[in-house]
Image 1 (cartoon, rainbow, N blue to C red):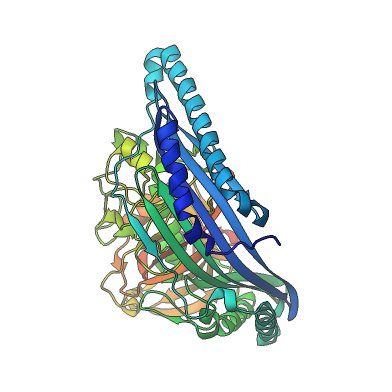
Image 2 (image 1 turned 180 degrees about the horizontal axis):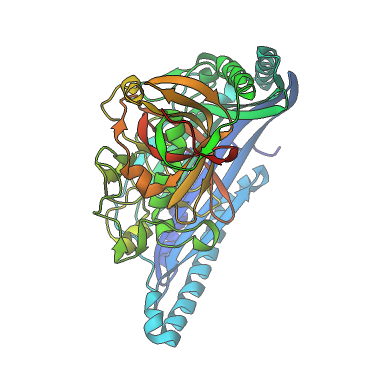
Length: 530
């Protein structure tokens, strides 16, 4: 009988993993560093559409990733990634040793090619430096998952019934709702990281998610909305919701019905006009979740800033070169502070990243002054600074990238209702939808779920199909009020890299006030004034 893949495998293979790494360090000449990641995921999912079950499944996944730094004349990396199945369990030790040997061969070949190029191109070749890792504290630790209902114990039939019931309630929420799609997921994963430096880190994570998409029609207008709730917890969060100081949402059933009613209301609203000038905008925490993601999070990923993904994803306006950057310079209003913090709860929480670095908060903007980037050990060695634990991969078979943890705008001191009441005429921008961002993140256009006109400090007419656009720096410099109502939201699908890695993480912030142009679905016009 073929053995099953379960998270318990991680405990059993620890001695084997350490033995394989030790043998490689002793046998392979020129090997400077090796690390190995092994990941097991046990998950279940269910889908419903328009009140009927659509699909369901459960699976177990096993993946392996190896990194080796090696070379004599110069040092370069070599990587191996494997997706494994149950039939591979009896051959796991051989596969580990083969992966280490293959990564070593790739590293030495890359090192030889790099050394040849350095000699061939003279002064230009000096840019081909050794691959180095900044030092970190070496840990041996075990971190358990947090849940009340173990994802492995949830019956698939129960998940199908629940998703179908939610879909039926969404369909009945408003006559304008013509289509809905419901997705539920619950899983338990366990990761092992080990290195020739002596690290041995065992981390487990529970994750449960609910997603709802709806389409509402009113007259000639149709409107679609999609939103997600989720947490690193068990199935209980969909049934009961979460009431955490930073992460709060209702039970998934109520969440989905509310989204359907919002879509119906918006479908009947007029489209937002575009403006031909900047206007006062007050943005809510949900909208600022995507703003923090797009104009703070991505441009402060140091691999991106160092142009390691320029051809595919772009660069960062915060760094043009090693000697030309914004560190220490004012890039925002003194009211703006932004940071990434893996210790916060939610999708972006973890204790160690995928090279064993203890994760910690890194401040990007401190009262308007740019302070630094998310990094990895390699990019910290290039740019300087202490590694802060943001090298993460979607799966063990993929090479990690610098990724957001919980990247947010910090809370201010103002009551959100006071921020709004001070506006004689402006626009309240609530709920995020879709981003459009410049190549170096120097300007943005992000659409909202709802936009209200503000008159004399009160919300007025509701508009659909619009958002705001601005130069990133100008927008941040114009912030003149920051609320105390900080919220953290899950982002289920941040894409980066080739091949594409889709990662779950956290973003958020409080209510904020600034200036921007309205980006609506009608032609630019002089929008109504006070």
